[in-house]
Amino acid sequence: MKYPESFLKLVEDFKKFPGIGKKTAERLALFTISTLDKEQVSSFSEHLNEAKENITHCPICGTLMEHHCPICEDPNRDKNTIMVVSDDKDVFVLERTPIYHGLYHVLGGAIDFSRGIGPEDLNIESLFQRLNDVDEIILSLAGTVEGELTAQYLKELLKHKGIKVSRIAYGIPVGADLSFADDHTLELALNNRQKYE
Amino acid sequence: MKYPESFLKLVEDFKKFPGIGKKTAERLALFTISTLDKEQVSSFSEHLNEAKENITHCPICGTLMEHHCPICEDPNRDKNTIMVVSDDKDVFVLERTPIYHGLYHVLGGAIDFSRGIGPEDLNIESLFQRLNDVDEIILSLAGTVEGELTAQYLKELLKHKGIKVSRIAYGIPVGADLSFADDHTLELALNNRQKYE
Image 1 (cartoon, rainbow over the protein chains, first blue to last red):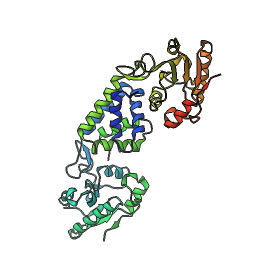
Image 2 (cartoon, rainbow over the protein chains, first blue to last red):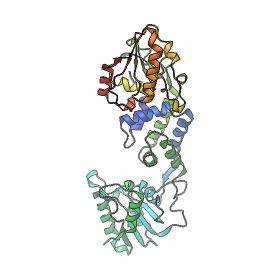
Image 3 (tube, one colour):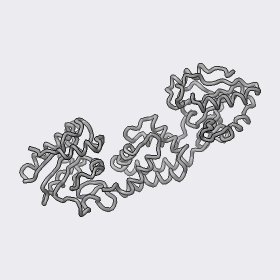
Image 4 (spheres, rainbow over the protein chains, first blue to last red):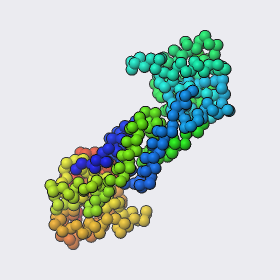
C-alpha cells in the first residue's frame, strides 16, 4: 500500500527541517492529519506564510525583525557597544538572558575557506560603517575553527580603530554552536569576556 | 527583547507536535524564516491544508485515504482476513513490510476506563458488520494494559462467531506502541501469531 499523495508531500516538507528524519516526519504528518483539527492546521499554515513574509533582517544590524528592529530602535540599549555574532539566531539566544544591553551586528556566517566563504561574503563592511561612538566591540562567535578565524580577522581589522575589542569567554563548549549553550554558560561566558590582544 | 509576534505564533504551532519542546520549536521556526525560501514555505503551508482536507478515514475500515481506500478497493487483498488495529497510523506501520495482505479494521483507540474510554467509543459495531466471508480476525493491538484489555474484550465477543481469532505475537516490546517496532520485529510478531484460546 502506498501512503496517500498529500501525505507523502507533507512528509517531504517536514523532512527538510534540521534533526527531522523520515520516521519523525511521518509521525508529524500523521499527527497533522489525525490529531490536529482543521482550524489548527489552517492557522499553522497561515502563520508559516505570515512569519516568512513579515519577518525581515534589520538593514542596520541584521537582527530578525517585524516592522521595527527591537534592538536598534530601543532607546534603552547602550549604543556604545556592539556585539558581533555570526547568525541571526544567536541574537535570540543571547537575549534569553537579560545580561547584555548593547547593540548587535549579525555577520551572516563565519569565514570558511573550505566552503568558499571569505570575508567579502559576510556583513563586515556594514560593521565598519557603524563604528562612530562605539567604545567596545564584543566578538561572540562560535568556538569553532571558523568562529576563531573570523574573530582573528576582525581583531586585525579593528586594531587601529582605537576601540576595545573583546571576545566572549570560553564558557562556550569548544566545537559547539552558541544555540546549544544553556543560559548560565552564556552568562559566564559574557561576564568573563577578555580584551583581545 | 521580545521575539517578533509572527515568530512566536509559529513557535506555538510547532510546540503542538509530539516530541517538540520549546527549544526545538524555536529552532524549527528560525529554520523556516532563515533557511527555507519563500516558495518552500508557501508549498509547505499549502501541503498542510491539502493533506488535512483531502485525507479522510475509509468509511469501512477506518484507514486514512485520499479519494479511494488503498486497502478495501485493492482487488488483490485477501478479503477473508481482517486485522484489527487501534490507530490509523498502525496500518501504515504494518504496510511497511509486505508480509500481510488482508484487510484492516481501525478501532480508533483502545479501552481505557481510567480515561473514560469504553467499548462504545471504539469502532467495534462496524467490525461486526464486516464478518461475512471472514475466516480470521488478527488482533494487532499494543502490548499495553489497554491493548490487552481490548483484545480480551473482542475475543469474548467473537468467540461464538465461528471465526478464528488470533493475536499478533509478543514480538512487540511489552508496554510500547506499535509504531516504535522495527520491521523485523513486526514480521516476527506477525509470523508467530497465536490462536486466541
